[in-house]
Amino acid sequence: MMVKQLDPAEPSVIGRYHILGVLGSGGMGRVLLGIGPDGRFVAIKQIHQHLLGEHEYRARFRREVNASTRVSGAFTAPVVDFDVDGGNPWLASVFVVGLPLDKVVAEYGPLPPPAVKALAAGLAVALQDIHRVGLVHRDLKPANVILTIDGPRVIDFGIAQLHENPSGLTETGSALGSPAYMSPEQASAEPITPASDIFSLGALLVMAATGKSPFAAASMAYTLFNIVHSEPDWEQVAPELRHLIAPCLAKKPQLRPTTAQLLDQIGWLPEGAAPWPGPVHAEIQRQLAGLTALTANPDATVMVSGRGHEAAVRGTGFAVAERPGSSKVVSRGRTVARRVGLAALLVLLLVAGGITWIRLSGSATETSPAAATLARLRNADACAWLQESMRGSVPPDSSWPSDVSTWKTDTYLSWECSATSGGQSLTVKPGDNLSLLNGTGRSVDGLPILASDDTSSFGCQRGVDLSGSNQKWGIVVRLNKAASCDLAETVLTRLVATRSSPPQRADAVSLGRVDTCGVLSNERLNAFVGPVSAAPSYISAHECHWQGTSEVRLQLNLVKPYEIDTASPIDLGNGTMVIPHNHVVDSICVLEYPYRPAGDKTEVVELELHGDGEGGDLYQKQCTAARSIMQEVVSKLPKR
Image 1 (tube, one colour):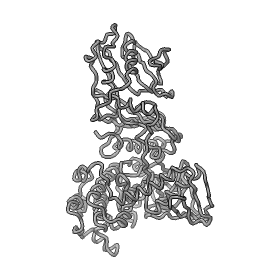
Image 2 (image 1 turned 120 degrees about the horizontal axis):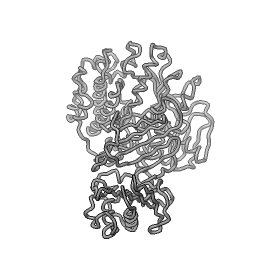
Image 3 (image 1 turned 180 degrees about the horizontal axis):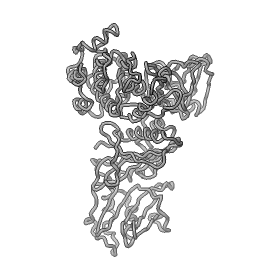
């Protein structure tokens, strides 16, 4: 994929993004490579000027942008910014980084059947997300499918392919799309439905499996004739793929399967298997290794030729074309070398047909004593810990039975234990937040005991800070409707005195074990919301904060089912439903993902995204980014 230079007369800034070059152009618009002030790289789709004067075009464009921002499935590129009111409307998406399918087949050969099935499944899910919001891609072709380390991504939909043609006319390149992969109804200029994308998908899968389009001919006229009248040659298609692809290529739209039917036919794919051939993965990993090596060396030297023709990052072997007239830059420094080097490397990867989104795995390190303590608290079986600690230790004047084995405990919850007796409830929460508790002047095992008492309403709470750095997380014991708080303090004392906490069962499936700071890397968050702090901060064993251009809070909760507002759910793809919460502040978006029932409660993932600024579009932009972040989080959760 070549990055073409901008015309010197064109503006080099769109919105808050500096334009580095042109990635491609079509009948309706073009795609630009941009970089934001926070160092985030985006693909900007911009409408051709000559189309802006068409009747009611802006109204249609606004509706299209509104629909596009809702497309944020697992196999599409999330939208991060847009402007529908400027002189030339535009839409910015996160880079989808990987190898374009057409280049993969050209350089490495056709994909084997298992990889074709993985490709079909991912693209079917992507089309499902696109069709659900009223869009038809219209230009699903190998160049618009990126193979990433963990699946395919569909790019280039929305702006250049409106669901309805704004002029009512048929334009080559806008209504038709790419000839070799269009549907019979596109070739005949008939009304387009989602079934058109299914036909394109079938043609694309044949190409992936055989190395060539099933309908391509020496001229466009013959190609269109083949699409409308000819059947593909199935000889080179593996037998196990024919029954999957053939229905997609039915000439009549009503005979083609829907995305749901296609997914049912594909069935479950093997877990853990690399979807692409080894050389493809090796190439992606090679490029990622170069990027990782660059970012790991803050003193890397970046050289930009004074001739303005090429730049190189020493030690990586990468080079990239520069715009004429660009100045000479020789930098040895952490900030400049890293920023310029990263930009140079990413542009190179695009030129090489390589990466268009970055997936750098990362998690909060657990080498510090505090992190090790958090890991122990997350993995503790709270009920087993409670019973082991309290045997023979119940205060004689307590209303609770002295035989701990008779306490009714909620065995569904491994990361929190609730015991009941005589209408009272005692809850033990390892790793909970203690920010609302105050000092008592007493201590246990050298640790100050913290407390909050309201015996008339909420009962009493006792806790100790185990963070070692005043981060205010540790063990909390809550006693509901208590006449006396002695039992809560006794339980806390015994828990702290127990040097080893019983671990959860090896087969337990629960959010309790999930490291909230570990499921999201700073690199992935940077792609969605801009720079975040160098290290996330634990608010509790089950809550993490990232601070920077935006504030991200990820929390795992146990809540009663009636506390979950199930109105207006959002489908993230693959049937993953999240629940949005309206917030009085426009710059805050809150999403909840009900993970699983646990006794009389539900384990819930809650994501809160804060941003700066004002305006009617801000909340929508925040929630677009939040959906992408939640999608990433859900993919890292334990399989149920």
